[in-house]
Length: 323
Ligand SMILES: NC(=O)c1ccc[n+]([C@@H]2O[C@H](COP(=O)([O-])OP(=O)(O)OC[C@H]3O[C@@H](n4cnc5c(N)ncnc54)[C@H](OP(=O)(O)O)[C@@H]3O)[C@@H](O)[C@H]2O)c1
Image 1 (cartoon, protein in one colour):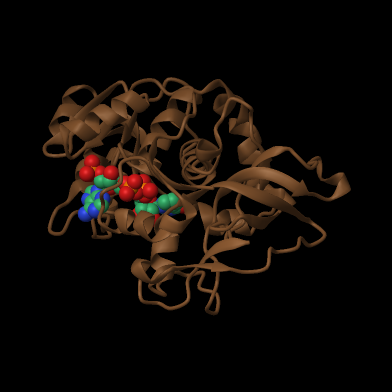
Image 2 (tube, rainbow, N blue to C red; image 1 turned 30 degrees about the vertical axis):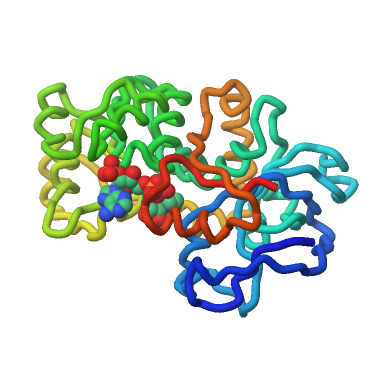
């Protein structure tokens, strides 16, 4: 089969299109013909040897796919020909991949393969953060930083689908704000000066924060200032570059909580958790209430270009390889 291999740690330019034997499945695994594979930061980091999952060279990257079942265990609920999404963790940038049955999910007919390959990492994180760790209640107001990004747009939609009240997007530009509103936010405010606007509007119950602090800035503290009593800030990532420090007195004085959200490590210790999350979101995925914002699509042979697009921060929407 054709596959993309990382053969060195020389970065995204160095990944290679190769011919390798197709994988065969283990007892609790599904063999999938890949139709689309999501491209994300783990693959970019792996191409430089800088990710926490770094198998010996050479290897085929690709953590999230959608495709058609070729072969599945008899008791798995899957049969040849079924449309599925899956998290193989590795091996997805190829014509065929194997994934654990617990990490393979039925793809609704209304959902494209590209959308299926763009779903679970971002929406699983958003669901884990808002619903599970953040215990979001009906009608609560949610503020989302980095709102035009992958985790951001997923968080907007998960918040709305699971009963949030007003969802406010925070973005660095108007163009990104429009993307967030198109994804389902009620409004956007620009990151410059967002605190005063949000406080003036009465504050929020939950802040979703995949961004952290810009160098020298203190956006995190401004977010804490936006929370009402019993508010929670969900600590998800640090794209702006700096890991915020929390002055604990701010939590005490305002009766608010900072909640860590580390989806992957948590889920890997609990087999079946991701499947249950998929099941909780499935009806909203099928209805279109949860709909990944797609970016550029590339052929398998252009995996290097896809990774470079991500590296240069030129992507708006999820990048996918389509086979
Ligand atoms: N904790 C978990 O379980 C988990 C799971 C998945 C992902 N993550 C993490 O969550 C973060 C967000 O992932 P994502 O896929 O949503 O990323 P993304 O699509 O690239 O979006 C990130 C957003 O961050 C903002 N940003 C601010 N400063 C930035 C900078 N210097 N460079 C790039 N972006 C900057 C941008 O919005 P503005 O320009 O509007 O500010 C951008 O839209 C990443 O750090 C990722 O590793 C965590």
